[in-house]
Image (cartoon, rainbow, N blue to C red; front, side):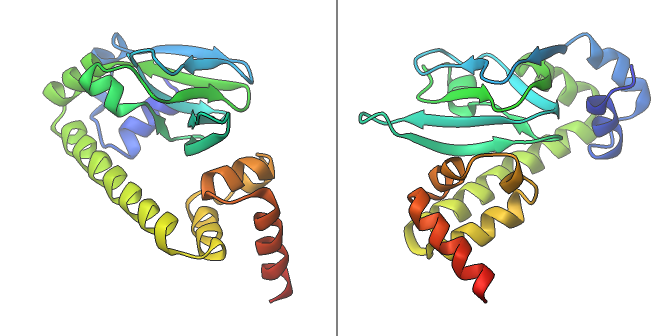
Length: 192
């Protein structure tokens, strides 16, 4: 039963060891190849993903074919399209693997069961949801009012190792700027 996910539940979430076998029945593992789609626009999202190894992203595509990256999920991060999952509505987003990825897959039933079994999980789940809201509000504020440099510096703080793992155009998409603007920002920071 040892895995990155169960270690995360024990160490970070503080789920008791005796609860883990009860929860193990509710999850599965999935090996993804780079480029695999986990969710497409119009589908109803049924799952959440915990990245044990690799990298996922959540993004939309606008009417002109431009991608807008909402979130990355590197190792030890969760990924889902919460609106579609919770409300059962068709997704406006895509989720794909940016690298070969080993993920733990679970659904709302796991969350409900884990919350019943483990008060620690219930508390952590509430914390993670509230933290996600806080991060999204911060991100919206940065997108509407911060300079490109400030947005980039916040990106580096949130995702310290991603700049070396993803192409520059994806970082620019996440920041809401052009790749050329990102190049200027990076050049300016190296000259400081």
